[in-house]
Length: 526
Image 1 (cartoon, one colour):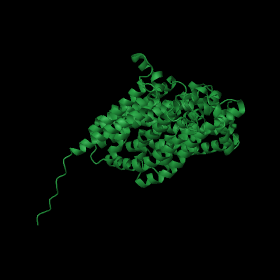
Image 2 (cartoon, helix red, strand yellow):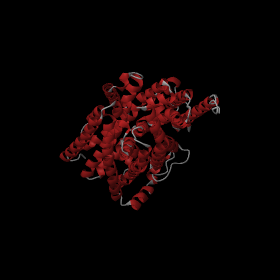
Image 3 (cartoon, one colour):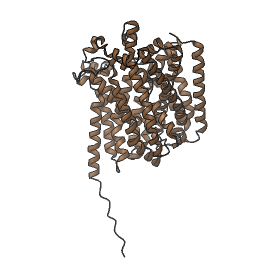
Image 4 (cartoon, one colour):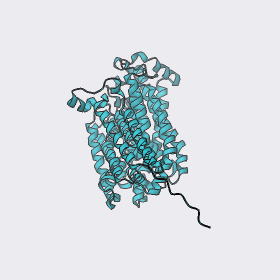
């Protein structure tokens, strides 16, 4: 059903007006290149936490992974555990502090710039910038799709119009306001997301009869698992799939590990650490960030799974059937069908906030990677505000065009692909770079290249979920995938990251063994 047009229009206008005003405030505070690229390195802990969380959590988490929870069950809650343990605690305490210190000392302004200055290697800046520019549009397109899929039925406008309007509005304040505007609007949007998801959890449990009744009903629906999923190992919506089954490998290696580990090396999140004034600011942001991530992912996965109970009680269908077979439509259909109009409007603002907060950061990261790290690297024009604005526009257009080309049920998979690639390519070099006293350039280049190449090869030729639709393996070898089960359902991250780690640490160890010892300091003659 479509929400009352007047009520929705008023809410959206108010929301957009506040967002643009906050973006304008960021624009007015943006005086220098440091302001545009790293928010002046003086962000408040509350702003850092909400900006990090709102950038991390997007329509991908709410719509895409919420839909996957409806399809595969509450096993996705393990992703929430990793998101908090790795994505917040480890990221802020062990990676964030060192990143802030080194980034400030070396005056790094982007993730590739940080890699270049830590390893004293322009080639690393080109490699990491190139990986960002070719892979981040996939994640960006997935987020655009998530927002557009909800706007389409809610406002009763076409998918094409929804996607174009969505992309344009977000781009406006990013292009002009830089990272200060992005982080200010992220904090505002994060607050909306927290309220919206809290209300969604309460209303969902009311709809299914309460916490105990709802969870019990979901457990009792195990015999309704589709035969195709049961044949691949799914046992129900409140239990894990059979150990070693295709769905177990998909849930654990692609969704839980792919996103749970991948968050540690997200370029757009690493930059958030470089905006902090001091380490105390990062410490204070941990608690806020942890609670925020719990309410975002935990609620999305719980509500997604419980939507099966609602659809079965009110139509005799499970969620995937009610959504016409499109996983990405489950949450939008559930909200529009089950919730009162006022909450549909609130949830639309929640999704707009989730998508715009992440999109703004991705636009900024892609645009600056294109200009600072590739096109203008080492030249003064790389730090030109106008040139970086042009870069953001170009990457926005590329991401929007890709969103029109992607198939259905792609949001969660595209997110896991991007995060898995980032972990495989960036994580070992990033970790060693910020902790080693004498990091090896050769080791970092070999690790980054090997991780990326193996990830791409496994994706194109072995992992059936991507290899089959890509068709490259079929065209060259006459088969959808080169290896049988279980290899064809094991995520590329599980193969590529260990290789990247081994290459990094073996070459780093060799380098350290050949470093000449520091000359002894002689005592002054008396």
